[in-house]
Length: 305
Length: 276
Image 1 (cartoon, chains in turn red, cyan):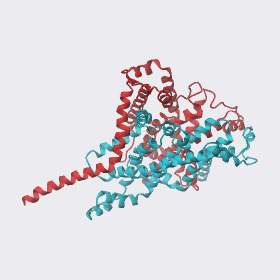
Image 2 (cartoon, each protein chain N blue to C red):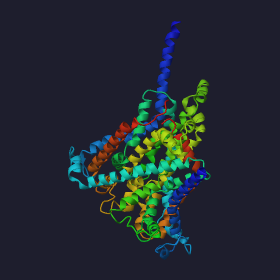
Image 3 (cartoon, rainbow over the protein chains, first blue to last red):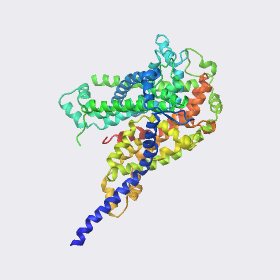
Image 4 (cartoon, rainbow over the protein chains, first blue to last red):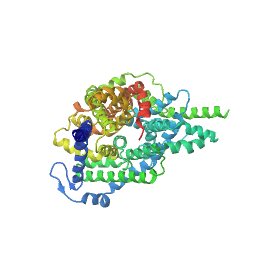
């Protein structure tokens, strides 16, 4: 019996090695992409953030000087951070609530519901540049659609893109218009709520409002958390609208963080400084995400198994 | 009675939202068909009179939009094929194979979603500058062909996990390798997720702005989105032409949506979130 006893472990070991190799073969394109366009660039960027470099002459090592400049000397760094946080603090809760409300209504069994779903998703299909062109015309102070509506209901016209006090409202309105993807993810979550829970709540005599708070919201909490985190990460990275709609103005009121970083890197060729700005953003997003998972993660209801 | 009243109330709210969503589109189309003098009228007329179809001709010949379309397709088609192949391979590896390091690597993949794009954009730009790839389409084609982005890998993995193991076990008994199982058994069963990823990839490329902005400089290399931005710079107050160009750029995306709607809504609903 001895030959078999030694044969089995050997074969099992070989099969395990084979399976590992096969597994790595399948994920190899992703790993290669990760190494070439992520890990390598990250290390390089970390080094860049410690240099002063205009792309043309060789980089000069300056240690943490870039970070010191950003935090202590660069007023625009703080302006762009403030603009981005202000945008985020309103846009994320606003879109989260609107998308959830829309998803709740679009989950009902009503005639024509798939048509409504399509319409609510439509804005998300508009190419970003086309929607900027369109909204620039909608926000036009004299002949735009929005001021026409205000005028129609007897309200005064607003200088949507011209007044530094108002311009952020324009961006929030645009954010509301494109809740489609968030709404779809909520719909997916609602799909997964077991019907039996609603039936049990009905047996207990719960009305629609009570069912929403006792069943839907707790069951949906992982999806809410997901949308919250993705929403925050996305709003911190707003670029196209700030670049094309207002070019950061008026008076830097829409100088979003990524736009300011982009300018440092690709317009002023301060590659080292821009790299450090990008790492500050990365740190903010990471701390924020971890904080949210730590503080809300426990409150989130996860289905067992 | 209360039931009926609530139903009507819900319907009214839904209609209100739908009007808000669709009004900008109607405004865009209406403006795109007006004469220049009609655009500058307050309060505006919704129905253009006369209808200026010529705006579309003028807008689309104002810049070489046919070249931009060709370039966009030259980027989109290889990226689409590369993404479908490599993202599904990675998804298969993560979903249906067991090997040491798999779960850690998958977490690394997922955590990339948290990384702001600008962090890698700067060093990758430097890399492509050194390779002499600036003002070529390569920086926009090659990176997505390696894995197709973590979100697509995630979608494939989630879908593959729902396919019963019995199917691949039976094939394994017959002596089939993983490559065969992946290509002949799993992929043919995965049309919904293939369609979803294909649509998202097509749109991402059709709409991408910052990538072309960084890498494409000469007119002969520009994509549609970048071309439209250039057009906005040149014709900044010719709203009827701008609206015509914006409508023309939007229509392909909307047509795709109307034909493939179920893959957006149902595709994500049914595949996207199981076992997050």
